[in-house]
Amino acid sequence: MIEEAQLKTLDKVEAISIDEFAIKEKEKQTAANRKKFYKSRLTFLRAGEKLDEYGHQQLIELFKLSPALEKAWKLKEKFRDSLQIPDVKESIQPLDNWYENVSQSTLNLFCRTKGTLKRLEQHSINYFKTRITNGFAERLNNKIKLVKRIGYGVPKLKT
Image (cartoon, rainbow, N blue to C red; front, top):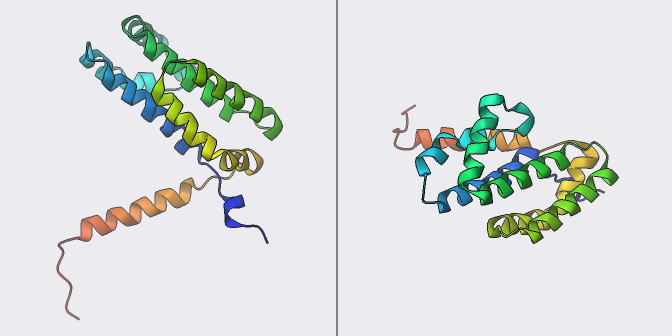
């Protein structure tokens, strides 16, 4: 019988959101030009191939203000690229390269992200094998919790 731990996969959205959390934290640390960073945050988190000319210009402007953000964005894009590879054996090497790039970078928050992903590495490999995620279950659980929160304070109906 297959154990539950073997079936669990790391949701692609979950992995990228871990990465994006590190990027958002890096943005917060940069005190100067917060307004500019705030206005450009969605552009910064968008996939590189989905950016239009204006988005690229915004990124170039941000990277001039903070070279650390440029490093963070490049690491995010490399991680996204490793998730796009369809074969398990081919996907492990780019992921290891990404771990090495994070270790060489001076971005401590990405090092924490790397540690989390290393811990969940078997789940990541399971994703590459099956291409199945637990995203649907996560969304369903979130909706259930939302309904529970909305229902707090509503008096019980007498039957």
